[in-house]
Amino acid sequence: MASKFDVSNEKGVTGFDGFIATKSYVEGWSISDADSAVFAKFASVPDATKTPHAYRWYIHIAALTGQTVSEPTPVPAVATPPAPAPAPKKEEAPAPAPAPAVEELDEERRMVAIMVKPVAGVDPEGLYKKITETIKSQPQYKLKWDEKCKVDGGKIYASFTIALEADFDEEVMEYIEYMEDEVADQQITYQAAME
Image (cartoon, rainbow, N blue to C red; front, side):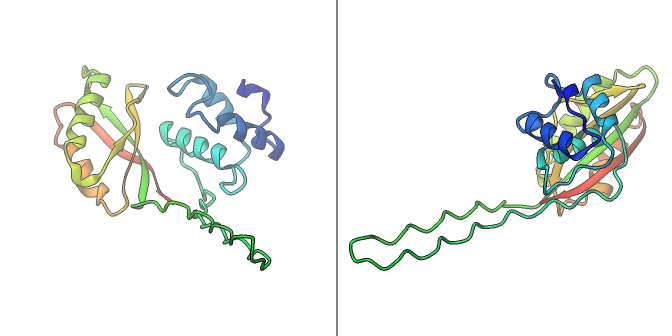
C-alpha cells in the first residue's frame, strides 16, 4: 500500500517511485482519496531525473485536481546509449554488435488539464462525454484523451496530451465554449511540454 511510504523525504519518494512505476493511481483505475492523501504528504515536486515515476504521477494528480505546480523539474531527454568499447583485436573473435539506438519519439506533445463547470442542471458526466466526442472529432490536434474524468464540486476535471504545435488555447477551447447552453465556465488548469 502506498501509505507505507513517507514521501516527505527522499528515501520515501524513492520507494514510492518503485511502487507507482506501473500504475497511474495509488488504488484502482481512477483518482481516489488515496491519491489525494499521498499527494498531500509530498514536501515538494519529485525530481524527474531521480524518481521519474513519482514525478509523472505527481504531475498527473496535480493536473487532475487543479493544483498549480511551481517550477517543476524538467524531464530529461531520452539519450542514445553510448557505443560499446572496441573489443581487443583478435582474429578469431568477431567485433561486438553496436548497441541498439533508443527509439526517438515521433512528435513532441504536451500534457493539458482543464476544468469545465456545467450550467446548473446539466449532467457533468454527459457533458464530459459530449466534450470528448466533439474534440476527438478534430484529428488535427492529435489528441490522446484520458477516458476518466473527476467531477468535484459540480466541476469536471480532465486531462489529455496534445501535439505540441496545436494552438490549444484558442482553437480547442472554442469548441467547448460553443456549448454555451451547457457550459458555464471553462479554463486550462495546467500545461506542460512532455519530452
